[in-house]
Image (cartoon, rainbow, N blue to C red):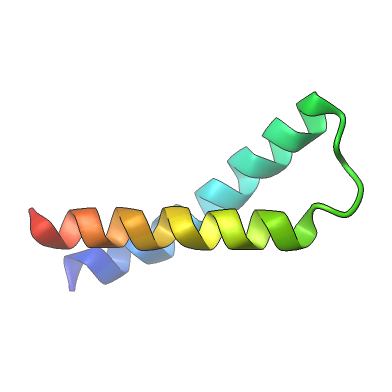
Length: 53
């Protein structure tokens, strides 16, 4: 259950961080799907790691 909570919290943080990263790299356009995929992976990994502790 703790892993699910961590996953819910980490997704918006990952989206925010990835948007800033891509904006700083100059890739603002057409990155929404890539941000969704990467943030989903980060959220899944964070939830999985938290559930193992």
